[in-house]
Length: 428
Image (cartoon, rainbow, N blue to C red; front, side, top):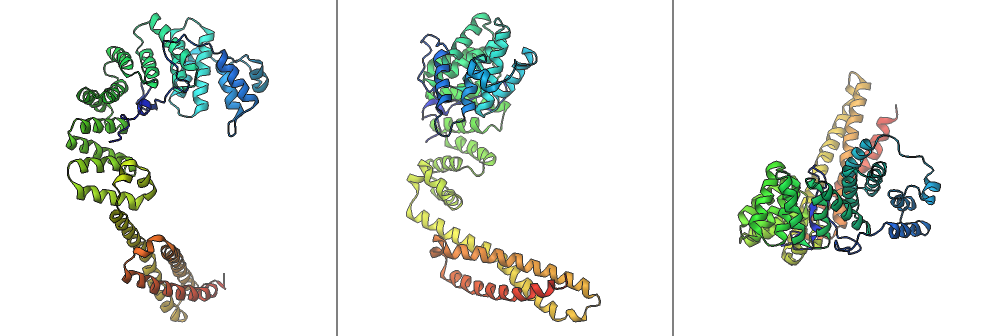
């Protein structure tokens, strides 16, 4: 079962902050290793300046230059292009804003978080909190050679104050990115020893233990995390995976059903549910879910590895038949009121001359005509789309004949409305 953690550790998620929102742990681009000496930023800055001068297709030149600005704001190219003065405010405000931006997913915000933390550290090179914030911001940014600077910052923070658990978390994530799970686990253990009730730390350790095949300890950590944040989709999914791997499919199913209520449209969640049902021998229930996924999102079902290998010609045919029936019913839902409203309009127009208030009657007729137009156009659009769809061949023959019959009626209604509408509006 592809729960994400029998893939590389890139699938692990964790927040660098106390907030429960997660930031995805991605592999470090340059294959950095913590035993390497902390790299100077000079090579990185030279690389970014070269990219600024000759940017790759689709790259924003000023985002590239912002990467230089965050660590060398006095670079001549930065000063020339940005034409700005020093950052205003107090270093404490810069750190607060950097912490806020670290929660944001877009790259420009993460770049600015590094810049603000770096500026605070320049203002006071002895500030442990500024150095820790820069380590966290750099780790969230995850940009090549800067992993070494993040590791070095976190290590220096711990040397200054061993109680700062977020520095252990920075090191844990950097180790995960190079697939050193056991060493990362040591850092996670240290962070949890300092902050035992932090749900994000427990969630990360649970996911790491799951990847290491230690299912019950993983379940224990994930359960504790869920006791604080019970509706966290990532933690629910990983605990379901741990239960499944530990051969407790009923408990996995319960977690996945809770996850389904949070993410009802997710093909991935449905695939997990179907695989668990298959493992439990509940093939009919699995087939029913699989059919519903194909009907709703055929492309998504094809992209999912488990569903793609499970799909059969019989399931695909059943899905096409259901899509065709559903499309026909949607067509009828507009055709029926169009036909009924048109007949009512024609009947009322025949006695309109007897109305006591002709203007009021005309407004009533115009409203009825608008209803006919709306339903008739919607029905014609849906009927035309169904008749041209590949699913049309799977429509029941009786329904196919009805579609042709009803489309003929719609043509008559539209022809009638082409005369009735202008006549009713001629006095506007």
